[in-house]
Picture 1 (cartoon, rainbow, N blue to C red):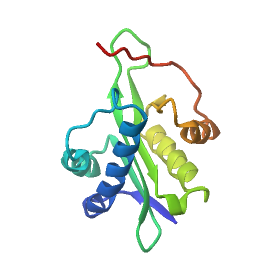
Picture 2 (cartoon, rainbow, N blue to C red; picture 1 turned 180 degrees about the horizontal axis):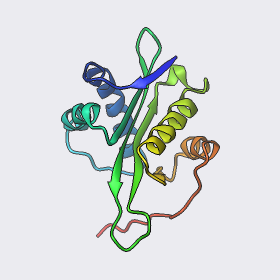
Picture 3 (cartoon, rainbow, N blue to C red; picture 1 turned 180 degrees about the vertical axis):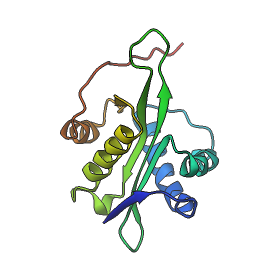
Picture 4 (cartoon, helix red, strand yellow; picture 1 turned 120 degrees about the vertical axis):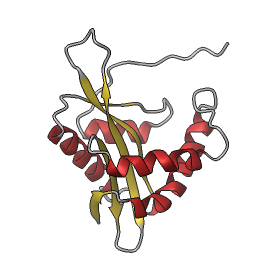
Length: 155
């Protein structure tokens, strides 16, 4: 499995995975993840821009036959009251089911951490859905820890 920076030609192969992750998130928490119709289409232009953005980390795991996983992250500015001025943020990670439990998820996350380090950021953050125990386990094995618990109230 080769993990590499995504190129524009990869985006059409990533979009079905985006649809899957969005559907799963919406199933777990429709109040938090109430997507517009066809969220993958909404992602398309954003992902294309990330392939050329030197301050983004957009990786794919290429099996040689297909794209097996992707990770998308960006460098985000922190509000100006903190010592940390910017941080890496991992927006999405998806590994196709047939490639899970092979270490692909850990490899792609660890490479993303290394890329953020090369960009000079001192901290990497991400969110996980409360119901996603597997993701929390993966991220813990990669060195992440719980720092906040987001709470939601529907009005």
